[in-house]
Image (cartoon, rainbow, N blue to C red; front, side):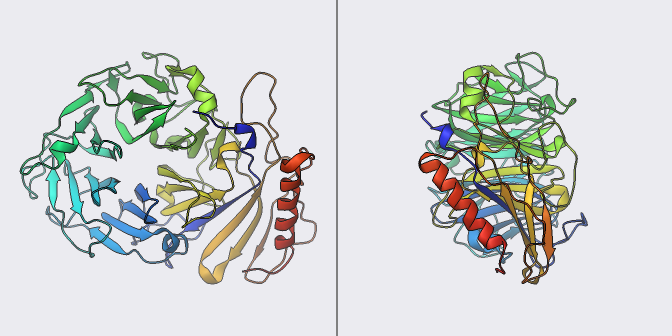
Length: 463
């Protein structure tokens, strides 16, 4: 697919911590009982601007308007909760997928070995019970049969098929026709099914997503235990071997974990494919970061792509994996989705379920696809509304990793400064990166104009 990566320059990048009024502070990891506590699953529908959040701590599926989610507003609808096994409770919710064509939500119930199905999901009322259950014959049974601890779920928007990952190292495939059948719903086929490291096996698969990868419709799975992503071109025949992998140089060599590096995944829990650019966003859970791979980086290396990531969120560089609860830090990030600019959001958004920090974080900017790291250049805490905004600056660089290419570290020349409380101005002595590397043409003028605009904002009272 064609994309001009040289134009994908990150001018300014920001971060919002999304939370309700009872949110833990940035230096606290204390658990709390609200819908964004321990978020493990995310879905989004651009047409309606609705976001769907699965919370492991509260065992709830919540539906938000994106604008309300970004300002700490209340959910529109809440489903589930804890309690005895029924159509209105979860034993352990882990993920959610939304079928916008039929307005249906699918939520994986990990501990009770099932998937709950909610009709009119975006237009119902709180407390509405699930309309259907997959994996069990009734809402009151929990035996492992079709599923054993299902984790991830995804809907193929073009075909309507449903995919579910589970601890038995398999992906169950439900055709669109089967999903609409009355009575017990059975899987049409499956992928993998044996635990191991090969082209036909997985090891504790978690998040799954469908999208366009390298110009082809694909299903991509976060192979948590093997430290890699596994992909199938779809539709795929029953038991078909994987078509490609990311994070390993061979189908039979899996080496997750140490050392922390730009081309190493450690316990990847989820991923997202941007259908416009082909970029892959990977929640590298045990390394406490989200890695960004541009299509121009990984596609040429298929089918076995052990390549360095182009960007990272949650760390100051690609060689660290330290957990944290402060500014821009992550602690066991789980789900991740990328949202292109639209009516609900003027800039692109990267939503990250920061599970052990009990919060959902939103990274936003003109283009996340050119970042190398996210080192804060400015931090503003507006305590009256219980959220913080972080301004980031980037020097121009190329996103390609071709021989001889150069990338200026985002931390170069940046001095972070902070001010607390409303109405404060930038502290004396603060320094900001002026984008001088590109001086000619429209790009150079645009970069300078953007820098001047943000500098003016930073040196006056705002909010």
